[in-house]
Length: 457
Image 1 (cartoon, rainbow, N blue to C red):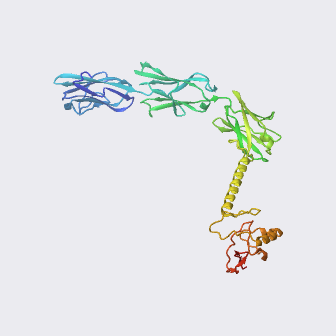
Image 2 (image 1 turned 120 degrees about the horizontal axis):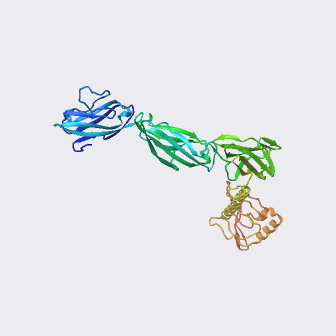
Image 3 (image 1 turned 90 degrees about the horizontal axis):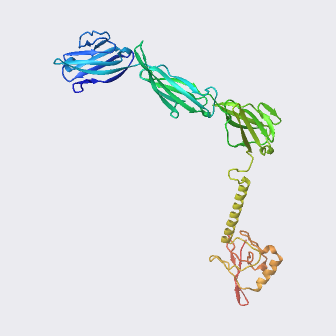
């Protein structure tokens, strides 16, 4: 602005794209003006503009709200590189001229970005080697902004921006800038096959951005793996042992079983070694086929060597059958676990039986004993010793089977037993019967009363 108190411009700095159409530049003042003069880059002389008046310059006409409102502006039909520079507007108020200015930046798209390798071999890069890339977006105005991506993931580490280089082309009267950026990257195995992208962002690009890509080719030896264990193999059947290996280029494989070598693509005895199968993304399936798997096969040592032009790696494999009873995670055999469970169940069952027998009085032992633990509800009574008892003991000695009475079974004793029931030396109450019992008359012997009950059968 020539004078901020008198003249205001919108905007003071403007960036337009070359060949952009209908670009409006505007100056204004807070009082009516009698005259609006424009000085435009690319136009030799100053010219006046007013509403409803033909413009003296082709492709440019008055733009604004009217001179009576202090509005002075110009509309450019199509912007060219010649329009870059400072546009001046002068408004006359009461014979006094007041000026303002707008800086016009004409943007034009740079060339499509390019990638060059400053250090390293892109076609034969190895793991942990260093590659240095440079991306250039030349001859743009203003300078482009450059970013790096690896498979659409932004890269920040190892990026070094470079100050844009400025040039002036006298033939076209254009001022342009070349933007560049340098990326230094330590190559990793997982970089192989990925897309390295340089992206240039600029207002003059049709889509706002422009890209260029290179595919990384990384060579690396077979990658190490921890010791492998293959589970679930079936004894007596053909078993296939497989392991996935990462390498580039494809590995060559050699199996060693108990000191004997088996090359890929060969078959010897019960062993066959197919060629590695490509799985994609530099992964290869390496396998070994064993015909008629035996227990002896499970105890053998299986060593695998995979190699290519960039190195070799050794792998160790263990085989496990689905019939094995060893639980490797706990170290306890399944048979031992089953035996322990059965032993616990047997012990618990025995303890339960003892408690039940003791509680119900159903456990029988040989030999006569005096049961002093009589249930109060029991009808069995203990009588004093009498001559009849001697007769009973003699008969029991002659007939051992008469010595026991099992639960639920009643035995019909000889009349000499005097109608008594004996169970292992203990008197018990006989189960009730549906038929009424017949009570015999009481007899008196030696001054003692003996009540005897005969149960009708």
